[in-house]
Structure formats: C-alpha cells, structure tokens
Length: 129
Image (cartoon, rainbow, N blue to C red; front, top):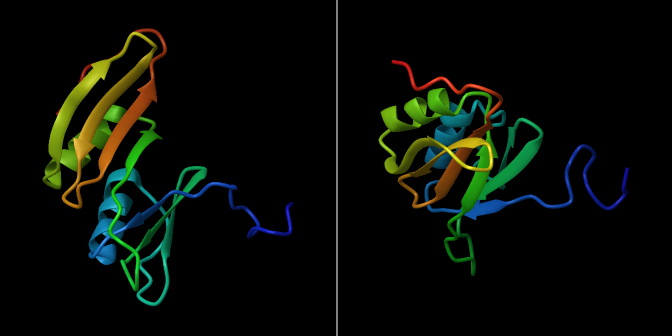
C-alpha cells in the first residue's frame, strides 16, 4: 500500500461539487446501491462497487462542477428504471452498443451525466416492468 493515500482508496477519485450534497448523495445511493453517508462537515465519499466518488459543496473559492461518469452496474435496465422513478432526464434509453455494452445515459437534477452500462454476454434481455 502506498503511504501517501488512505488504505483501500484508488489513486484517482472523481469529485462532484454541488450546492445540494445531501440530495446528490441520496440519489447516488438509491440509483447505484452506493455505500457511504452524507457528511455535513467534510466531503462525502461514496463507494459504488470497487470505485469511489466524492461529493462536496462549493465552500470557499470552489465553483460547482458537474460530472460525466461511466458506471458499470449488474443490470443496466433495472438501474435505469430506478433512476427514471427519481425523475432524471433521459438522454439515451438502454441500447446495446456495437462494442458490447448495454448502455443508457441519464442527467440528474444536479446536471451530472451518468452513462450506466452492463457488459453484454450473449443474448441481452430487454427491459421488464
């Protein structure tokens, strides 16, 4: 382990700066089954599978920054439906790409873009209710 970073942390951690940290944290937890909690006094760090993302407020001289993240999930259609129930803007409904990912693109109410994907293996089932 490198002594210059916290144990279990990757070298690169995306960070989203927003005025509504608590709301964005809850959204990410609901849509991506993320682990972690809202922290009022410091950046909130969420774990999505083996990845981390930090969410913090603008505090001081920081400007609000949006993200465009590509997230692999076990079932893109299920994740897409959860996000749709939370009122996201649909940019791209689930589609199977030529390179083998079944992917959808959504925009959350904080103006972040999320491409959610599942690597296709063989026949891909369509969305179910």
